[in-house]
Length: 590
Ligand SMILES: [Zn+2]
Image 1 (cartoon, protein in one colour):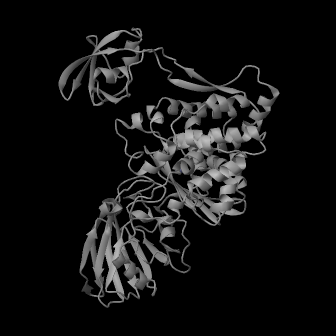
Image 2 (tube, rainbow, N blue to C red):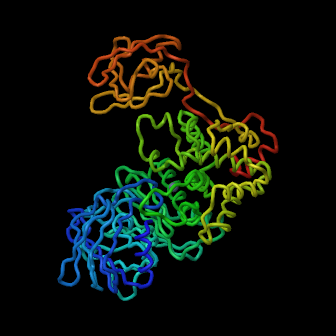
Image 3 (tube, rainbow, N blue to C red):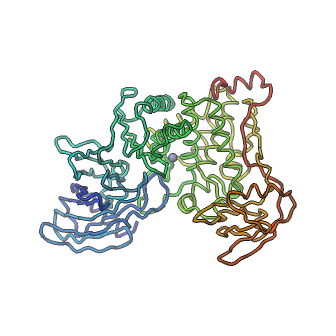
């Protein structure tokens, strides 16, 4: 913040203009939200308006201002002059006018939980991607009136309605406005109660989602997470579900979550269970990350990246619970749980970047790395979701073993809620470690040095053994190792990834090359493994590719097969203690 801005902020806090937005969508087919900002009681010669560059929960600068067009400002009949001071900063010359009107349009044609979408079937928006922040006035209440294009379109948002005014809502401050998505249209709306609190499942889009079947499972998830944290810290909560052809995902809010899921992903059992994991994940966030927040996210800076090394806890630990909660809810059994856990361990163990980037660094660099996948990503990075989830597994297992299941990671979550979440006091990495240590009853310097801030291999067996389990590495296919991954696209077989130091890389094969032949015979994404099975480790093969349209042949010396799958399996003849530990953790064995 500059000195000049500080003076302006100082003056602003001495008066309280009213802030009122109207959002209309007269022609939803053109994907344009028409926004009008009315300010009354304005007292300064200029008005600064800043569009957030990101939205909390999604750690990437998304430049929401790029969707803004047709900006104008006026006071009564008079047009006001304005200028842009930076990519997301508009400044209007208001003179001595107390009543200001600002108009602009927002193009909304990106269907995701963190962006805006408007078409003939509905409108959906996130506050950060449509509303201006008025520097210095973030604590002022903001009214939002929605003007739907048709009389049968309804409005669903976690914001409270203004009594007596149609489709008008109030946010107590700018953070609340940003944290409150809007769904406008003819969506389904299902109301239900859990622990005396109202809940709503709103569904937009066609597909095979069956609310009557889903709600009992969602209720169980709510009950279990409420039990874990000791109650529900809200009066009403909304699950906003978009059914679409792609883009599965979610975005957490304090009083709602936005979910997007495959429209036909609800009949197949495995897909349905994955959806329930998504529900468990986003709902868990209403505590972990929305209220239990790292210090760096205690006060959001909407203009810049907000750096924290703790996303491994915010996202990873939440991921650990999104696997555990459906098990506790009886949505799947321990066998399915261990199968899912095995898949996660496999994903970690086949990613070379796990030995390069610590979980804390992955968290810190989320802004430039996780959401910006390139062909070196798997060689140099590890997701803080994945690593954080498996670090949480080890922490939970070590606490449970030491205290015979009388303590667990649940106690860590409860304590974090009591000490930081309830009053929304940001925690530091040191405070987080201290809370975990206090529950574990042991010093975790080495653990954090090796697995959170370092890149040592996670020693799964050491932690699984007391629970009568072990990790088995499998190579199902006995394919000599070449170290490249292909994808068939547009009639070509393109090499998408070449593993660091793998035989393919040593021979000079690059991502982006088009695979043509092995030893003079056509090779494809589909038959590569089959072809390689005819060779032995140590064999030299001739791999022919197009590299930037140039025909090249490389001699690749194949290596011994690498494990392609890891499975958590029971040890033979578990001891009574191992059985007891297992049951305390996962319930009775199926
Ligand atoms: Zn998450």
